[in-house]
Length: 160
Image (cartoon, rainbow, N blue to C red; front, side):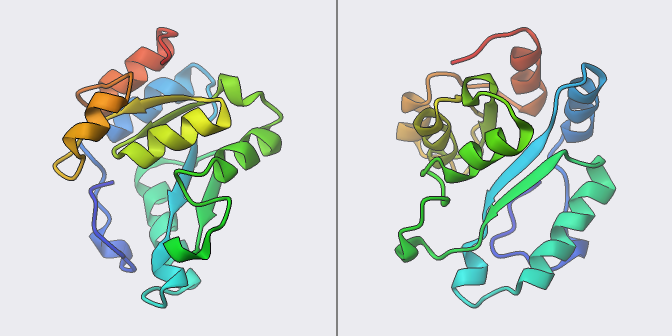
């Protein structure tokens, strides 16, 4: 999705270019898909859980169903184990899907996504956007120019 900070409005949900194509390619290979997302707007009192759920429902309406959703509703200062870059959501996803974290690939647009993957023993692919810091790109290990390229790397078995 295009980044809209603290979005509680499903009408503002816009997929990134290539998202539908990338997800169709993954699903055609029977690879499970999921979303792991920090939603600190809930913990900060900016958003309600109902708003976030409505936005997530719109995402699925536009891109098709995901096999699982993991969401951290906590504010950064809560010190929880689920907020990326902590590995909690990825480890939970692995348990729920009954797969080894080493078989998970996390595709994200900021360093915390890749760091969470590493901390969980999973693989991370960074797809930089305007908000991605240069040092996050440098530290990522595996970088793709867009979501379609990232998915191509996953389907080719290239992991970082």
